[in-house]
Image (cartoon, rainbow, N blue to C red; front, side):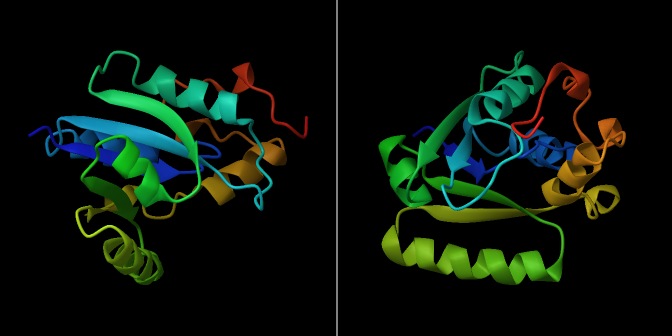
Length: 160
């Protein structure tokens, strides 16, 4: 049976930390779906289409990685796409506590879907989309925090 994992997130923007988790997870799964979640309560900096395009550029030569989007519950998306695994990265103890709670709820709602957590490498532990987005919003150079395939100058934020 094919091992399919979903890596969900808002990815606003996609960072080198996200990329590293995916690249490391490729040895564990046959296919990874990077699922850009739509959260109407969250104000995004980049549009959904822009975020998907950025991520697609990063993995354009990797046929086992697919980029998609979804609304609603992540476990429902997993079921619809035949994914038996939810992939998440952990940077800090706070991440662990948050992800543990979500993982337990997901397991209760969908017993057949396993949550898999990968620790970030130490040099990426301080990188998160919120901080990177604030650097971009303030006109700073965030290029070293996003994958090299993403040229931030090619993209406008929704607020721009």
